Image (cartoon, rainbow, N blue to C red):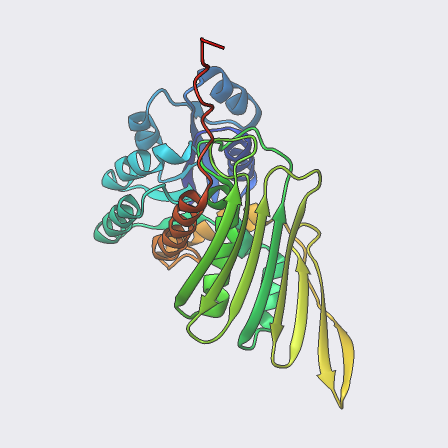
Length: 320
């Protein structure tokens, strides 16, 4: 029987809480440490799922072999580098960090240390995407929509780095061709950064992708539609359902898309532990996540440059 890995979680907000839950349930892991800036939050998690309330990253290092980092994005680089230097495998939530230079440092250190650096692009473990990949044949046009209500979290980054980055990483994975042109617009409504964004990507192989992301929608939607020479596929990440239309004998026919449903985060963390034990390459390592980050930063920069300047009211004339 494979030895259990001692697993820990740094940051137990809404996402980190689920990491703790799954580590508690997985046979490959023993949840041994939980760290959060709010110690009472960590204590509640430990009471429910076990482990020890760590009072520092150093204590997490002493107690763990593999660690999930679900802290705010601006802390990803600092925490991950400390864990990697100490010889611990890391799964850091997306985006890998805010800065591609910092991301490259994380990738290089993990490689030097011979450690797993996996990034939490959870949709790569969604059964709907697995089903799409089984039918993939040179995509020509993609349309991706990701809508959600205002989250009240991750507001230090805009919607591109917050949620669209999921789809950017997936599209880079599916298309496998360099991006040649980016056309992006976005608007800040309730946050400092953009809350709505629309992007068109052109690839060297002729493929085009349209992406829409909003975190101020009244409904949730996570869908991808893909057109290729022989078929049209439509998948719903949220419902884990899909449909496919093919041209056969001059007629368009609908074919069933078989999807083996399951919790993506469970699959992701199980894969992380397996990679850590076997020393194998994760589905989304630091290299793939950095490529998605670089594209997201390019998009965000273009949105910022195109944003209209706020109008400044002229000073009042006291003589009137």
